Length: 153
Image (cartoon, rainbow, N blue to C red; front, side):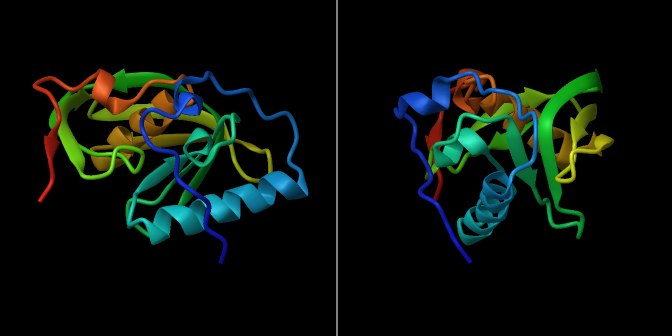
């Protein structure tokens, strides 16, 4: 198990637009493994590569449904509905805020083997996909918070 340091709000890498992945390499495969290990160690449900200092379009998500996802070059191609709820982020420890996201998303991406996949997400998975793909554009959830951040207990 290898965990990486999670970058915290204020680190300029979190505001960078990430570069597309064009080929899977042993180094990127190790990065994906490390991202899962880091996310699990921090009790998160998603992690984007810039959160561990890598400016690549890679996201890992596990909402606890036994279907962990690796999304490479993810692109949200459809959204519908609306949900508002508390959101947090491993890069903003101890903080949460109300964010409105789509209830339903369809995301096109590449899997770990660089095969094209389409993922349909509802509820928490839709929220996680939106949150993590925002990271790849240098957007943090605090940019979308409706009534300010507050401390978690």
